Length: 434
Ligand code: AMP
Ligand code: GLY
Image 1 (cartoon, protein in one colour):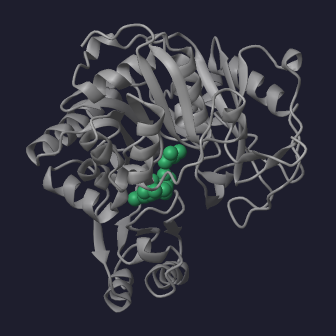
Image 2 (tube, protein in one colour):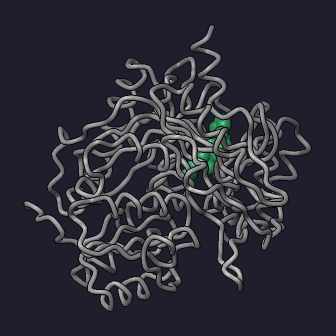
């Protein structure tokens, strides 16, 4: 279907940095007539109308899209996808980007995705699933260390414990299965072999068995420098990530992506949307760590700056079945994002700290500030309102320049308790210097 300029009334669902980046891509798209977001955040509200929305509720999304006359909905986060938002929009005759519920199960249930990977012979860590504590602890006794304990359901990136000793492995099992620290998401757990290697994020825009592969990126999930501290939703990212060499990329396509898309189709899932494959590049080759069914956050924020093709057209083409894989054109250079986190993150977070941002003329070149957990206070002051508060994004002719610019930008942003990692992309920079 040939899309006419200004033919789309777009609704972006979500409120994080990823959705802020998607909103900007929509605002820049020649296809957009109107662009609205829901629920959005303080930064998004400066750029487009934002509507209140319980974004977890598919019926509420449909009602809002109808009210706004939206003819294209981009669903950012995983929870509405897992709840069937795209199925509900399709039933209402509204085109939407993102997989249907049956596809979203690849992220919403780690036991489901592990079984899928095993069924289709796709490389991943060996694992066993448990719903009761005693057999889980019994299994642990014979398992080598370190061992990985995962809550099966959605846990905002925090439901994974890498245990280096028996006591912490046992504690993780009891926390999930007995104390239900992740609620029902921890009613089933996986106990999984630890994979040694370097991680990378591979994002694909998928239309059935056709896809475009976006540049590989690397997230930094641990809270502190040197990959120490607890897991987070993501403390920073860069793209492209060299750890995905052309050879690794080829193996990812033939050993992971193609069998996954063929497997989905064979199981009757018409997958349209982003497929995020978290991989570990091990000595035996790339293996799947996890699937996500939406753009990564913060990885999305470093991929969109590298697009030359209009990402909105690609998303729409995926949604309508028109994707032509040759259509992706990218820019040279690298992009980096630093997550500026609130006091206490990833533990219990303090909210309401006033934020000071640089004036537009003080911004370093090719940089932007994306909002995640922000809100406007009573006098119009910008306040922290979540764990990941802002993203400092920069593009550069190479990774070195992008990193320098991102840190120069972060140095101009202040709020009490603000913390961020000082070593985003350091591994790749050190490798390229060596
Ligand atoms: P997940 O939510 O499954 O992506 O897990 C969160 C993080 O835990 C991953 O990004 C990895 O850094 C780490 N992780 C998960 N599973 C494994 C594994 N089997 N071996 C090593 N690290 C893992
Ligand atoms: N940054 C990791 C994720 O989006 O799941």
